[in-house]
Image (tube, rainbow, N blue to C red; front, side):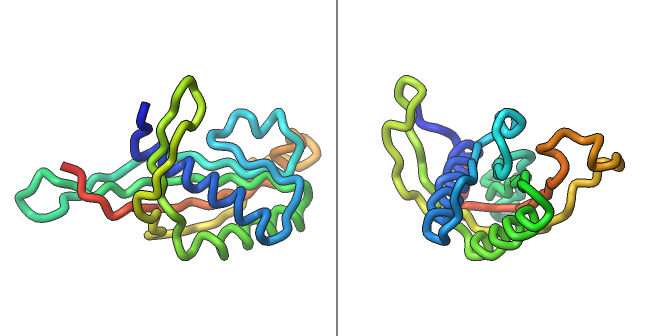
Length: 159
């Protein structure tokens, strides 16, 4: 089963982040597609989630569109310093975009991936998660949270 664009964007970002963590010498950091497993894993954890997409027209009078997808990257730091270092590192490595892969699944596992362009970063914003609750009352994973919000596109015209 060939995955669709949103899942390919998530997979491409997860794969890129995992590879860059190794290249840049980070260790013991888990990267997940999705969100729920972050609470069952000791920090530090990074999660990637595709959210809303806009589909502006490619040109006036055409039904063709160019998808712009909102992506959330959550940082669950092990402490205040780790949270800030991870979010700054992510901003730095994501600025130039990442390779876009088209994935195929067989029996629930990736059976093939083909480079099919680039995930271009249109906008990027990073901000702390403020629960308006004293840190000692939050779950351990929520005490050092940060959110990076991306708007991305892959430059493909959808007809």
